[in-house]
Length: 324
Image (cartoon, rainbow, N blue to C red; front, side, top):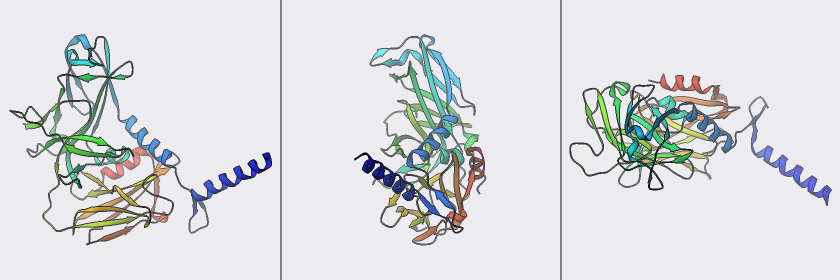
């Protein structure tokens, strides 16, 4: 019986190894990353961009300034834990994303949910994560918090910008839903004044100052084929629109039968000049490929293993930020 267990275990390990490996044209074995490997890479990128602050709840209103000059106004007297007022030291985590490179490595693209449930590209004035904790427990605020965001980080103030809330699904992917509130004087969401955005946030979590990308051209769907052994659990496909520095779309649908990623909402303008990006993990680094594309109707874009390169997080961020 022990021998049978040993044989079965050996066969199982061999099967797992086989299914996670392929050979390239030179006959070299290529080991594919697991979903866990890829998720850990994205989590590490997010951790690298997380800023940490501390303040005393008894201090009342405090102003915290981020590395990029965002000012966070928070009132410690409004913080609660399980409905009870908080006293003592409070920890605050803060993430600010203004560039496509960081949006890609943290898996935080700018895809907004349309009224019919479809998703389309947003142009961003900044993505933010704010969370207050005490002894590792999440706090709530009865009066929300505010932020002052330099608009020159995203090309200047845009009066069309509105506030969005980040919704993360069971697969860890994020989409943005409009923060709809009734109020006066703009103090229910966000407004631009001078060279600043002023945002009024009701609760902690992910938020975004954005507007939908606007292009009058006819739209289409597209499909993207990635190298063998990759799918939506261990890789991602993104679209960087040329000329738009603060918007990053992604293809959030994958068909197991065809092995294709899809933008099935029909929101891609025909004739759009863009760069399609394939991204995955390779030994704690990023494996990626980028193709310059002019979108044609019902386009199919194909990536091969030979077109991929490997880069560190910092290198890939610089490469993505350098796209036109």
